[in-house]
Structure formats: C-alpha cells, structure tokens
Image (cartoon, rainbow, N blue to C red; front, top):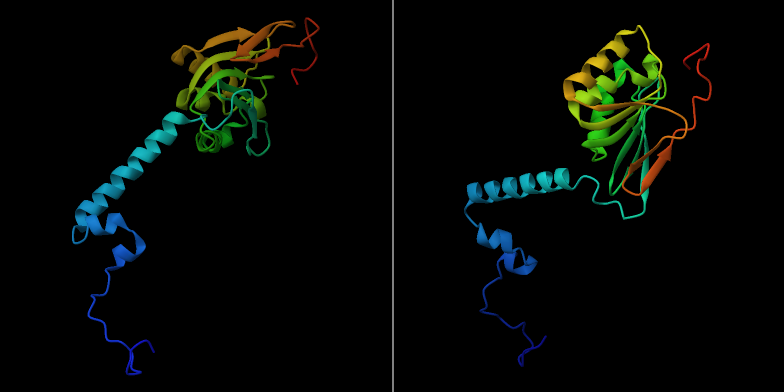
Length: 196
C-alpha cells in the first residue's frame, strides 16, 4: 500500500508491448508482416548453411588434427582433418558408400587432398568410386596391386573420369597436406602371397 489513503494506486500507464519487454527487435520490426518475417528467417538460414558449407574445416585450430572413424559396417574408412586439408584412409564397402559420403559431408569434409587406399579388397576400396564422384579428391595413393573385382574396376574408372592424380605407394615416399606429412612404410617386398 503505497498511497496515502491505504488503497492500491491506480495507474494510467499503458501496458508495455511484449516485444518491448523482451527486447525482441525482430518482433517489433516485423509486427503484422508475417511474409517478410518468414522470408527474412529463410534468408538468414540459407546464408548460415552456405557459410557453414564454405567454412568446412574452419573450426579446427592451426596445428591440430581431428580424426574421424566412419561407420561403414564391415570395412574401414577414416579421415585425418586439419585446418589445411584432409587425408582419407580407405573408403569402406560398396554397400556403405552413400552413408560414408553423408558422414563425411556431416563432418564438413568436401575436399580430400589425399586418399590412401591400403589394399584393393572391397571392404577398403568399395566406397572409393562414390567418394571420388561425389567429393573433390585431388590425390590418390594405392599399392601396386590389382584386383579383378567390380569395386576395383569402378575405382579406376572414377579416377580416370575425374582426373585424380594417382600414385603407386613406395616405401620412403612422403606426402604432405599442409604441415601434416605422411611417409609410406611398406610394402617392403616386391610381391606378397596376399594383398591383405
């Protein structure tokens, strides 16, 4: 009771608008303009998606690396990503190729500077042709081994079609992606009984 006569004071001030209380400038500006508000929201979302796509690996600090191990079922696929580039090691099976590409895009990987395929078994190279077709792959390293599999044939076709710079792995060879450097340690022998 703040008044002199013991009664509640009666105010004449108008009730503030909700946008004034919340500081919601957007609501105040677009009050009554639902189409303009929806268009603005859509434009902001499109810009955010494009910026995220263009930035890709920008969240990785210089000198740091992020390792991804992709779920490709019975097979192998992993990536090492730095602020300067990406190295993919194997590409899983043909059955998992679409899922591998989805996982890589979700991780922000749009370009593979160096793809390393350890041996020509389907569970390591099966998804490689789709990766080459769907993403930008600059260089590819493979052992001097061949396979009569459909996966190997598709891989060679994609490498040729997309103009990927392919190299045969030799012990002592080194490759760099920015400051990240890898060295080929094997094969040590001229021939092996198994390509595994």
